[in-house]
Length: 125
Ligand SMILES: [Zn+2]
Image (cartoon, rainbow, N blue to C red; front, top):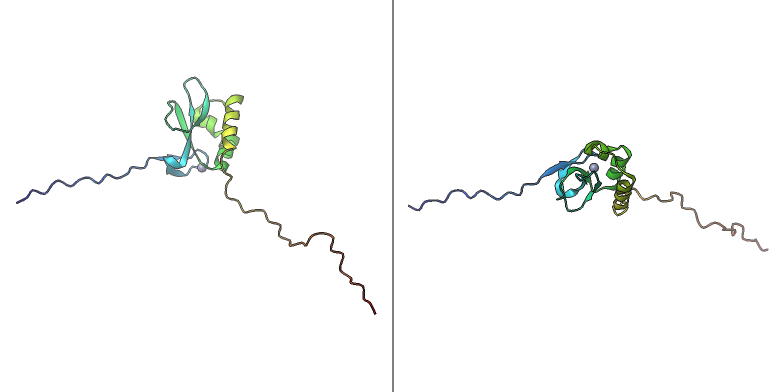
């Protein structure tokens, strides 16, 4: 009788989850961006996710970054104070983020182009 080989453990992809410090949503790490505070106190966006230092995760969503900055969540999370330089760096990074999907501000009123003076076609008799 053939010995059945032990069940091969299915290599399940383990998705590391992280929580966004702004919206508190838990997402797979790859959907979040990491901010790191380096040992020398600098704070910047860690695109590789591999920098050593204390890290915090924020969704790849502009609104989360705005919130994180506005409510000092990065500073709180990393227990530091953002220097002007670091803040500028983060703002610069934020400018590369696509804006959140927002309802496009459409002009609800379908006004025809101004200057339609043809309201009264002269009645000719
Ligand atoms: Zn978020």
